[in-house]
Length: 617
Image 1 (tube, helix red, strand yellow):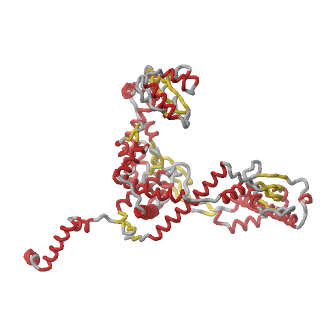
Image 2: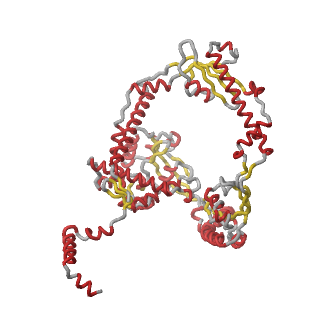
Image 3: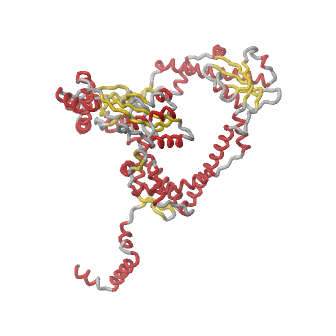
């Protein structure tokens, strides 16, 4: 074999191949050869540009985490992974189309531009200054590298430039805004007649035959759902802490370690407070300049501070510990050294300059006063250290066990029972969809296995097994007779009310006057706006949905509920005002223009997407 290879290597074909390799290396380098075999896999190609598998999988992971964070009780098993992958791929295709369009229009950001944007972003700053460590940590927590984040910013910024340009170019005529505002401010004059359910009660009679017929026709609605009686073990951090022993020696050591924290620190502050308005920056700069020139903080507080009470004392606020001041004020105060003055601090009260006058610390309370609190804290701390270990032991033990008694005895936990869990769930902790799905799985329901250990909340895990399974069954008529009767009474009452209302409207439309029908029972409402109070929303909706009546006539409609019907006679429609010089008009016009711009941008996106050549492997 080796001899054959050696001989073939001297042949004409081998020499041609080697020659081509040499040419490739000399022109394009090693990547021309290696790249052809080790190129990164792609999930799609958009107009010749690849969307890499690595980028796709990273975004799938981020999107999965985002959807989990929106769940009240995060459960990965509830995620539709196929839909997530589909949504992420389509978003990447759309992003690629838009990025290519921006590049074709000559929009780009230099590295210096990106640096400037990043250093100005508040989430990457500490005390108002860009902090590289925070930047790197934040980006990594997003699941990205620094280079990836910069590239994402580069793409998003230029795409947003095009979007903003199109959206801001949206236009809306003043006439459209005026017409819409007139409709919005329109008022109506109408009268209403209320027909209570008691007026038609004598027309509602339900027989046993009707009840039985309804039961037979709707048998599927009267079933006892499939149910499970279950046994379960719950492991919680709280219960673990309750059973955790804390010795007196451990308590004493913990008390001594916490001494510095237990001694309450109070700080005496003075401040100068000014209004947060257009001139705030200029005023604050003047105050800081005068302080730098040696003027007294107290004197400037008396001159400038709008906190008139403290201003009379030179801005003195006295001593206070944490939890007293606004969060931003407190953060700035407790970062100061004695005698130091803060940079301007914005709160809901205005803009402050804060000076730390003094710091004092109270004595540590005796252990006897704090024993219950510290013992509870220490037990919880110890339980937190053990929780993951005990959880792992319970998961392994329950997985291998034929029941729950053994794992419970082994770990000192209690086996509890619950009845009537349906596929829709039950009382906590069986209100967790993942636990219920496990309970009704074939292995657990029919195979006699325990469920997996399911995390149903923060530091709360549950394992369960089926004690008894009951199939869905038909409820006997006797158990639901009253329920059916109530339903039929309500149904026939509504029908009778609607028939009565329709009859009144028919009489009115044939020429009878309002005074001839239920004289004295009509209520009049004049110049009622859409949001008028004191009138049922259904009545207002009916009044504003009726057509404009002819001069001297009325339009009629009705609304029916379980306990009454209301006939509405619309007598007049009053045009609303549209003050073209008012703020409401301008806000509406801008909103309509923005809406039109957004519509145009959506159409532009779709056009680019339709024109793109997309290939999927």
